Image 1 (cartoon, chains in turn green, yellow):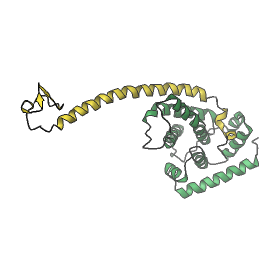
Image 2 (cartoon, helix red, strand yellow):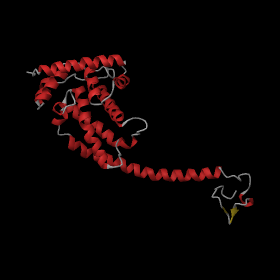
Image 3 (cartoon, chains in turn green, cyan):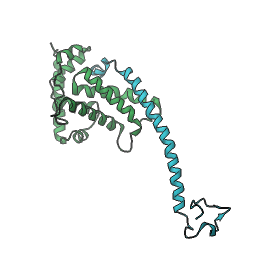
Image 4 (cartoon, chains in turn orange, blue):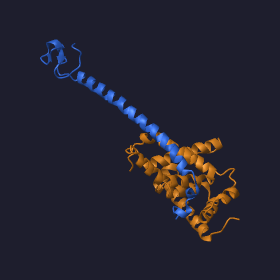
Length: 172
Length: 84
């Protein structure tokens, strides 16, 4: 819980959420520059609207990830007018080789390689699970998919990620 | 598994500090707006309180001048019917 009337609490929130929001967006876009543009947009919206946050209506976690989701949807809409909100291919036009080459950490290169092989829905569910820390019911409500499908896709995604990470196959 | 630091792509970003500076400006603007809004709201609450008192006057069937609670051209209970 944060007391946003104090600048130090606002900074604490940023320290807590910057990596989580960044990861969440990166998993969807797999593109560093696009991700950073969107992360900036999300946090600036958060800062502008921070005093509108009402803890009685939703948790801060739900609030900030709702802003992240809506900002992602807006960016997908800008990319194409013909995509549905959660069934869009966010990766159109991404040069994977270039993006992969720009990643410095070897462990992250492996994760990137693995993420490239997952479909958008699985990446979305994994990021909501790990970074938004939502449970299956919350994910189900958020993306309008029934809970058992969320559970199946999550297990399948985790299994696939584990296999790919265990293989430690480097992208060449 | 995926939330380990070594898998965190934000570690490679130099956006964090720059963005925080921009955010702080927006945060300060939002905070200033809240402070001025608080003053306006206070005035509204005061005005609403006066209006509420006027409606709730227990002697509203009487003209103020004939009311025992009315002396020296003012209501001793603080109702605001305006001497009607």
